[in-house]
Image 1 (cartoon, rainbow, N blue to C red):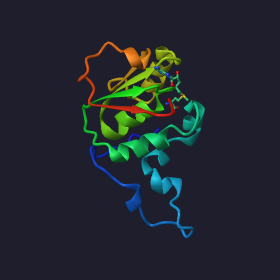
Image 2: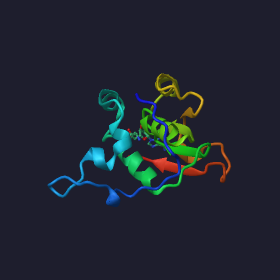
Image 3: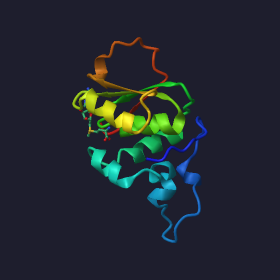
Image 4: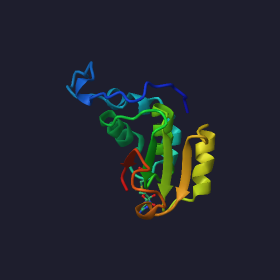
Length: 143
Ligand SMILES: C[S@@+](CC[C@H](N)C(=O)[O-])C[C@H]1O[C@@H](n2cnc3c(N)ncnc32)[C@H](O)[C@@H]1O
């Protein structure tokens, strides 16, 4: 996977993306330029439904994320979204899933070079042992 450095915390609306194709519709690469840079084969191997990166990028376009923020990723599956959040926005992500072993996600996170910023947790996201104000933001993609 690439390791681009992004300016975190920016907001970008898909409505302002240009240029548009002749059909009048934006392509996936125009709508989700960050996701487009990821290795498609690896994304395919690790997604559990739809492409997990597109909705994550879409959410991030509306969120204000800054480096070091604590983000809870609920039902992260194989941690694609957590890896995206940490890589693109410099946040700390708690990759939490009830059905995917944390050991497997730890390996994926390590392969992405993000062991210092993504924490895999095998747990029910509804009852985590953290205080109410602990997380700065939360995302949930297809879970
Ligand atoms: C359809 S998968 C989507 C996974 C990932 N977000 C993606 O888009 O690739 C839904 C995931 O949510 C997890 N999940 C459902 N309820 C959960 C809960 N209460 N706590 C933690 N994980 C949960 C499941 O284990 C499953 O891995």
